[in-house]
View 1 (cartoon, rainbow, N blue to C red):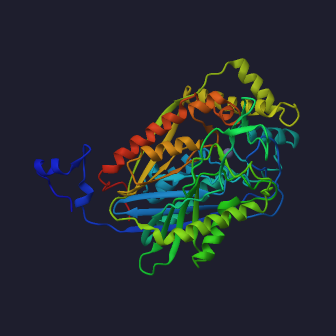
View 2 (cartoon, helix red, strand yellow):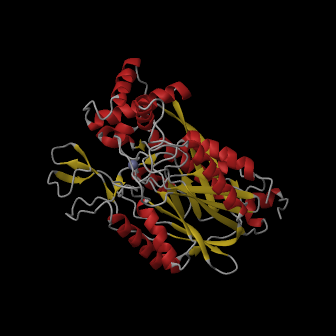
View 3 (cartoon, helix red, strand yellow):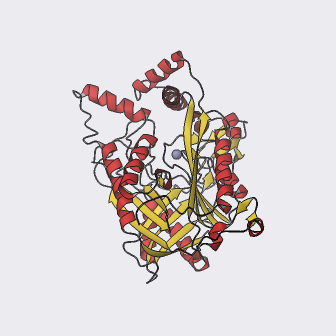
Length: 488
Ligand SMILES: [Zn+2]
C-alpha cells in the first residue's frame, strides 16, 4: 500500500533528502531460482589468462555458468557467474538482451560475471584474435583449436540459465554474513629495496621491502534457503583474491569450484548452487612471498576452497536475515578516457601481436602491445571514451551489492565499501566486460604489470569509485521500484 502523504508527513519521512516510501509499502517475499549449464569447450581449446598459446587437452573440471534470479514484488534481478577468465561486453550484451526478451527482466537488471579462473578457455580479445587468425591461415581457413562457435554457445547458455532460473523461482529467505578469511590473500605489488616496483617478485626474495597495497579479507556470503523447509538452495560468495592458482593443465574452475563442492557437503545439499564473484583483486593473489611453501597449482585450489567453506560454516550462525521489501537496482554508465595512440604505435603493436611466441619480445612489451590493440579498438568504436557500466543492487536497507567491469584494484573496492552508506557492501569485479586491470592513480605512477595492461587514462579507477558510491547513496533511500517487468 502506498499512501498519499501530506507535505508535513512527507517532510518527516525525508532523511538525507529522500523519501522513505518503501517503508510504508506492503511487504513482499523474496522469490529466488537457480539454474546451471555446462560451458566447457571441447578439448584442444586454448587456455586463458596468459600472453602466449597454451592448448588444453582433455579432462579437467566441467566449467559451469550459474544463474540466480531474484524477485521481490515487481523487481527482478538476475546474476550469472561463470567459470571463465572474463566475459566480453559484446557477448554479455547479446545474452542480456536475449534473456530480457525471454523473461521481461530489464536489461539493466542482469549481471553477467566471470570468476576469473585461469583454467578456462581463451575465446575473445586481441590474443585470441591473432592466434585464431594465424591458425586459420595455416590450416586452410579452419582453426583446429576452435571446432565450434563458442561465442554463440555462451550467448545461448547465458540466456538459457537466466530464463531457467527465472522460471524456477520459489519463495525463499536470504541471510548475509561477512566473516574474514585471513592468511590466504596477499598484495602482489611490492616496493623493492632498490626502489623499483616489484610484481610477484618470488618467494623469499630478499630485495622485497614492503607490499605496495593492502588486501581485503572480507568473505561476504549471501545464503538462499527454501522459505518453507529451510533447505539451502544456493549462495553468492565474494572474495578479493585472484582466481589464478590453477592454470597448468586441463580445464579447471580453481578454488570457486572446490568451494561449491565443500559447501554442498557442509550444508548437506547435493544440488546447492554456489555462485562466486571475484572481489576487487586486481593486485591481490594467493602467493605468500614470506613462506617457502610451494602452493602447488594443482593441489592448492582445493585447500583454499576448503578453508573458505570452513570459514563460512563457522560464521553461519551469525548470519543476519535480509529483510523483505527493499530489493532495488540502480545502474549507470560512465565514459572513461582511453589513452590516444598514433598510427605508428598501433602498427608496431599489431606486428608484435602477429608474431607472438616468435618475436622474443619481453613480457611487458607484449602486454603493452595487447593493451594498444584495445586502445585502437576503443578509439574506433567509442571515439576514445569507453562506456563502463556500474550496477548497484539493494537487498535490504543494510545490504547492497556493487558490480564493476574489469579487474579492479583492491584499494578501489575498499574505498567503495568505506564510503558506502550500507552496513554491508559487497563489491564484485569482472562484471559484463573484459579482464584488463583498473589500477589506482598511484599505481599508474608506480608502474609494472597491471597499469601496463590498462588502455584507460590514470584516474579511471577513481571514476568507478565515484560512480559506485553515487549509486549506493541513491539506493540507500530510494523507493523500491514497483514496475519493470511484465510477467510474474
Ligand atoms: Zn587477473
